[in-house]
Length: 374
Ligand code: PLP
Image (cartoon, rainbow, N blue to C red; front, side, top):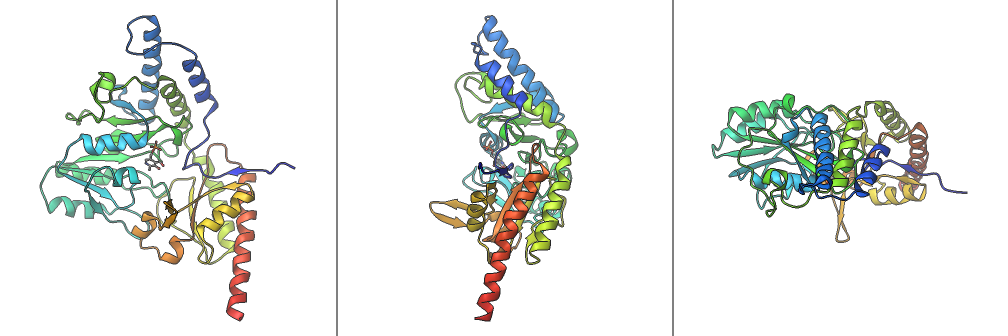
């Protein structure tokens, strides 16, 4: 019998939407460099223009503000390095593509729920008046915790600092309005909202007048990002963005059910960031005594795909910098998994997770009882 699978790792990458696949297939089948002046080039250019409008509309920006990149990582690097500010302040829970974009950054701490306190940003800006860039993500990829970005941007403006926001995980899940946020730069990634991998955008408001390109050569993307555009990928990004505007609020009930059932099975489990405003699709769950690696592998055998809250590099599993910054104890950081739902997640997927995870948790509890009796 074929194993039923439940993909619950949508924050890592989500399924390509049929409309995005159709747009990509059509664009791939056509010839034409968008920089060429002939009809084939003009057709490719039209695909770019349409996608630029669609991506801009997702975040309430002007089409001219959208610079297409090879993904969220490149957009983050362009924002941090390209603005050339003397001070770069980034929150402790940023994705590594922000944390490691520069040789040196200043870290903004977070509270126990994984939130940045705007007053702390104010104090850091007050302490040093060199030109600064503040980078705070809209929603965290591990916990889903949403940051008070609009308030941070208001404060930063008072100090003349530019504000960048990595909205990779928020876009397509909750409404994102760049003007309401008041940020100067915003990062997006196609594959987190139903588009293809390897495409993203940096949305740069008019306030950003001096962005230096990372890649030089041709004059593409307003001379801010040289290289022939990935027309098919961008067309897929645009089509996905148009559909993703509906958001993921519908999966909140499923996520809440999943959490309630997990906590009922294992009272020692904890949902990190549950006391904060969160994305509707993300659950970061720890259960001491049950390592994240064991959970991910056992769940995979049961057909359920989730990810570990810890990053594994060169054979060593490092504690999640996000949970560590939140002050979570090591016994929990080592056992944290991320379950993330998507636009095609069903109640059966959640039930499959609960059944498989519940069996693991019960087995771990029996082992603990046996060990304490021995
Ligand atoms: N920012 C956040 C918050 C992410 O979660 C990710 C990907 O996981 C990225 C940036 C990087 O985006 P990309 O995979 O498009 O380079």
